[in-house]
Length: 541
Image (cartoon, rainbow, N blue to C red; front, side, top):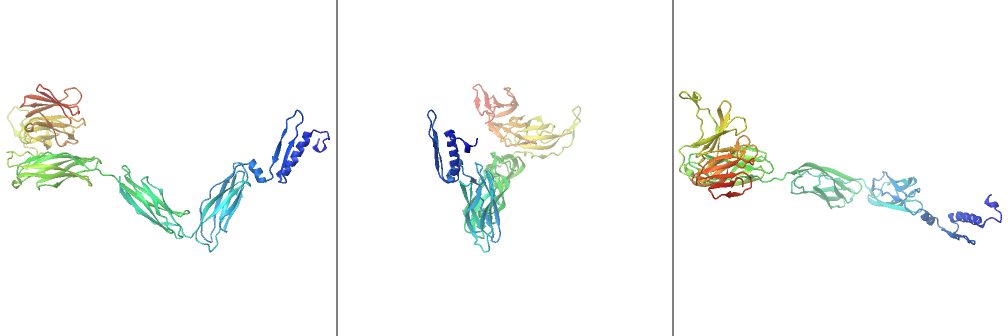
């Protein structure tokens, strides 16, 4: 039955519901506020009152309660007589349709709702400044509304005919651990203040706006590379008036931080007039740079040459060739350089009148001597005599330069160690004399003392109560001698693994003390000496 034909005896509750529907419609139309209630019958609960607000905005607030969100518009630039447009975006969590509007701004600005959507809406800002229009920056604001709530955002408008111009930066160079700076300059024909930034580039580069100006602006590029940043790269910097940015690229070059090379200590040298003496020297460079030796100062008869340089290690030879006018004490400053930094050592020189009756043979190419006939029976029908320098005492045979051919290593009483490098066919290709830092070498030992796979040499210096170890380098070269003290007057030396630890040890016989000194090669740097006349010393320091 339709409610209009309910009998008078119908339930009061039905009538109350009909009344409530009518009042609700009137209230939603904003006609009048109302309050509905129903008296409770005996045994029935009381129905609470329903109150409707007269304002539609208040009713929407009660239903929604969430405002829309407007995405902030970007700044806009436009020339007089031209147009510019920007799309607006907004969202509403309640899914309400949205409307865009202009809050404030220039007269040539209009805002249009393109799609009100159902929770996601789009609109448009349109700029059409006439001619003439004042040049310069301005501001405007747009809003979005769901009919109850709204969100408003401001943005910048620039009427301009000229964007900013950034002058081309110069390329920059700096060394690791150092710093470099360059001033950036930019102009703006509209007199806008400008800001600068590093668009892209290395982490060690920064850009700071120094003076934004009013048409003329300045900034600074600062480079501060750390060790490990060496190399060449590019950086992009920009100058912006808030609307348009001018970007320029330049190159940065970071040079590797150079470390000074080091030259090993030099042994004092004694030489007689009108003779020659040599000393092999060694230097190293932590940057693995190629090295060159030089004489920084000293007598004219002192010269130095670089014999090898690779991988940060270099060897050279000092040559002394004094005359009779050079007798006396002198010193020379021997240096090594990597092309940028250098290091020097002082060399002590004594030119004395006495001289050996025979001069030590210099190193060099060996000329094959003539064949000498000898009576039979012999091993062969003749022999060839090769120069082993002054007073050779003993020799060993070993492959010193690793070419698969045995070489002869001879201990010379007054000329250190002489090596005759063997060649195929039983002859020799070249010779090398190595200074032992003293005289009286009666024996020589060959072994790999430092475990680098290259043969090293050891020989006693009878006159100075020590022995020398010459650590080998590739190709049959040797570093400067390292001296170790012994007993009095060492005359012989031998190498072998005495304690079975896999490292060759050394033994010397000390003639004056009638003792044998044992040097155990364990690298600990500890020296132990027994009380029985048998001396035990560690090899390395």
